[in-house]
Length: 509
Image (cartoon, rainbow, N blue to C red):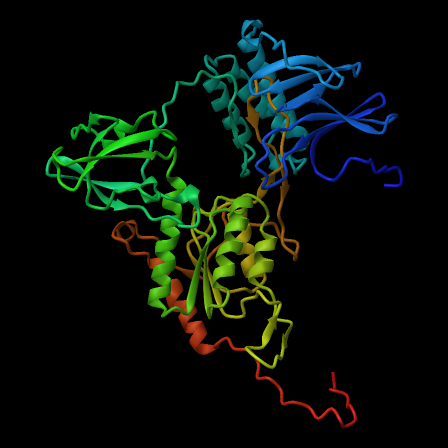
C-alpha cells in the first residue's frame, strides 16, 4: 500500500488495467445506469501527465510482449493496432481463414492427464477421500483410448472424478459439434384448443414493475384479452394439428403480427403486432411467487408474509431484499427455499432475516421508531426439499444454527464441498475441482451426501401439487400462525416520561 500512487484521471469504472513503458492502459467502461455504450481504450502518459484515447470503442485488448502494439477485439473481429492516440480499427485479422491441425486423441489424453493432476493437486482433501487416485488413473485412463467422440471423453471424465464421492464434481463443454438451435417466441400465455382454433385461456401475470417479466400482451396499447382466439401468426394460419408454439419458431425477440378475434373466425379479426419473448421463464417464475404470496396473505388474514429464495447467487440476494423490504412489517414470515440451486455462501441472508432489535426511539407524533429500522421481530419458518442444494444446503443449516425458526419439508440435497475455479482444458472444456468443505463450530463435518433434515417433515405429494395444493406451504402457514398466537410480536411498552428536574439515578445496568 505504501507504494500506491494516485493518478490524475477522474474516478470512474475502469477495466483491463495494464502497463507499458511510461504508460498505463485501461478501458473506460460505462457508468452503472448510464445510457453510454462505448468503452474506449485509453492510456495515461506518465511523462506528459495526460490521458490519450487509442480507440473510441473496443470489447477488450491485450498488450504485445514489447508493449508497442495492441490486439483489440470488437465483437468477433480482431485487429492489431499501434499503441498511440487516434489508432483505427481498419484492418481486421482474417480469422475465418486461419486453420490449425488438431489430433483429437492426443488432446483427449492430455485432458485426462490434466483432470488427474487438477484433482490431485487442488482437491481439498490431500488423502482424496481415501480413494486410490493412482489406481483410478490406470482404470479410467485406459478407457480414453477407446473414446470415439468428445462426448465419450466427457462421460469418462465425469465417471473418473465421481470416484471422489464429492459434490460439485462437474465436467462439460469442449470442442463438440452443436446443432443449430432455433429459439421459440413466447407470449406468456396458456392455450386452449376450442371450436377448432387456439384460444388464450390465460395471460401469465408476472411483475408489473419489471418489464423483463411481463407478457407482451400486457404492453400498453395491445388489444388482446383472455378468451380471444389467435388465428394466424405473421399471416400464416395456426395449424391445430400441431402445438401452437410451432408457429413461433425463430421468432424470439422479434416483432410478430398476430391475427386475433373474439370468435374463432377470420371475419372481423384484427391484427396486433407485439415483440415475442425469447424466454418466459422469469415471467412464469414471478407469477408462481406472486400466486403463493397471495395465497399466504389470504389464508392468514394478511398477518404472514411469503418470501421465495431461488438461489444464493447475486440475483437471489437482490430478490430476497426486495421481497423482505415489502413484508418485514408482517407478524410472521415464511421463507421458501425449496428448489434453491445455490450460488454463494448465504451468511448475509441470515443477517438480514435475523437482525436483533437493539432499541426503540420515542417520538412526539406518530409511531415510535424501532432500530434497526428494517428488521423483522416476529416468528419465521423455512421450507426445504431435496432439490435445495449447495448454498441451498447452507441456507437452512445457518437458519437452524442461528435459531431463526423451524425447518419444514424434506431433507436437502447435501452438497457443501464447494468449488472456486479450475484451469481450463486444452480445447476449452471444463471440469471442477472441489477445493473447500464446510464444518460446523463444534468441529464436525457437514453431512455431505445426506443434507439438512427438517424439524417438521412434510412429504411432497405430486398429485396434490398438480391440483394446486401445496401441503408443505399449508403446514408452514399452520406453524407460523401458531407461533404468532403463542408469542405475539409486539414492541415493549414505552416507559413513562421522566421528571428531569430531579437528580439522575443509576438505571442499575
